[in-house]
Length: 165
Image (cartoon, rainbow, N blue to C red; front, side, top):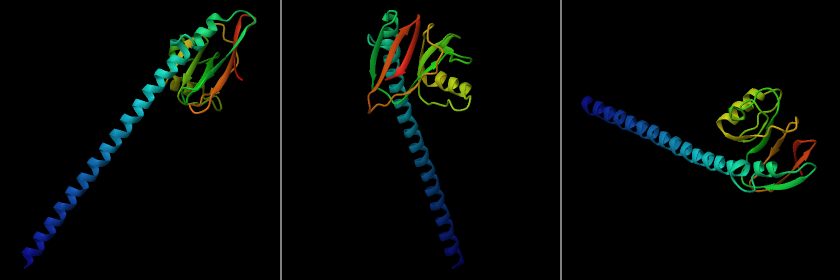
């Protein structure tokens, strides 16, 4: 009779172990799939930000290059939930090569001299373009996918200025 109790206890421990392992495997799979999904979203956002900033006929870079002295152009941005940022002082993302630049980056961390953290974030999750004559003023414009964000790009005294309209 004691043998029967012992066998039931062994069977229960064996089933419990299988259940725990199954739960661990399921949690790992869910974690893997969620990471895969967010990497895909991140890649799509990176492509869209590259189109907005550099790679299309109506990109910010092309508008800046075609601006004449004293001219202003407005542009509507509605492709991504990232931020348009300027880097004109101190630390800059690697893509800026030490020059003034504009970036579209994933996360904004500007608060209280967090420039180094923001620079690292733009290095990892962002697209930048050099704008050598960018005015020394902080640009931090939140772009929202569901709402159009209108910006005004102007050139005055050979300096490019970007503001939210």
